Length: 384
Ligand SMILES: Cc1cc2nc3c(=O)[nH]c(=O)nc-3n(C[C@H](O)[C@H](O)[C@H](O)COP(=O)(O)OP(=O)(O)OC[C@H]3O[C@@H](n4cnc5c(N)ncnc54)[C@H](O)[C@@H]3O)c2cc1C
Image 1 (spheres, protein in one colour):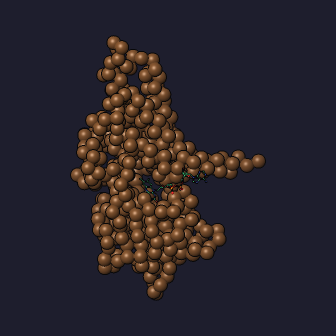
Image 2: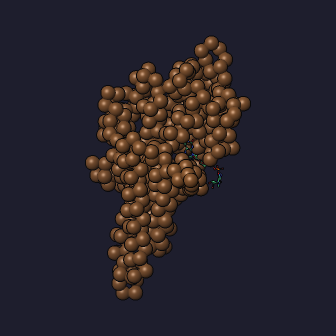
């Protein structure tokens, strides 16, 4: 069903929204109707209650259509995972039913202007000020869905002098008005500057967030104040593990689309009296691409299945993310080469994929960071 949706609704319209860099509202409305914002949310909260493996397959198809569409769902998925795993019952009741329908959408925010990989170096703070209220100050960077989301899962320091640092970090569920740059009233002090101009990954907005005296109740701490204070780093790292499976699925999707485009174009274009697909050098490229796509898909599904089975999947999720994001870049570049000069033209879809694919090498942990995670986990599991 999602594959058909991508073929009929996403692929034919992606070029328009990419070119305008505008939010694909009609596509998102249809996704709400299909229930795609509540895929992993339990049925008792209005979602479909499906597992991570099924979700990964859905994300692959959305990303095959257009990576920005999977980006609109991605941060929402992480937000719902955080609530499902760490939220208090009150928080689940408050947000999950409206998130399952897509009525409110979620973003998550770790990165800051001066740090991304080194999450423990964040500077934003929350301080208890008045009875039950915390005041948040600081600046966040690169928040996907930063403007149109209604809740942002925001990591800040509640104890900047804590050692080790991660023990002084807390995740707040920050509410705001979707689509508003300068919030007022109860959300005063929470501003969203104009969206960041990007190479690709258009349509879905990436923004900074500015917290300047934003006040939020203690029970907006993920899990509640007693259970959640000082737990933010651990909670976010847990969510990033499933987030990595999700990014891996996006890599598979974009790689698959690049392969499809290459298979089609190479059987249409002729040089030296025959279709370029008949040249062995082109067939080798197609063979390498198809092998990369399959290997990336299998790694992704393995990581998702392990997680679904309740087994450790940190190492496997890191491998899947690393391999699939690199496979996405590689397949897109090979497909681009196969398109010759036309690959450089905006008339051809591969041009968009060429601008979109590099994001996956960076978001939710760069390839270097994945290698660090994989190396560390390998040593942990093979201690002598
Ligand atoms: C379009 C887009 C959307 C994003 N969406 C979100 C979002 O929704 N929420 C959010 O919180 N963040 C988001 N991010 C931020 C993203 O997670 C960070 O950009 C990423 O984690 C890298 O951090 P950085 O950019 O600060 O790079 P840095 O951490 O400064 O790294 C710079 C370079 O140094 C390398 N490096 C860093 N440390 C090491 C090391 N120890 N050893 C070897 N190499 C190292 C990195 O791999 C990289 O090559 C988004 C980014 C982009 C571009």
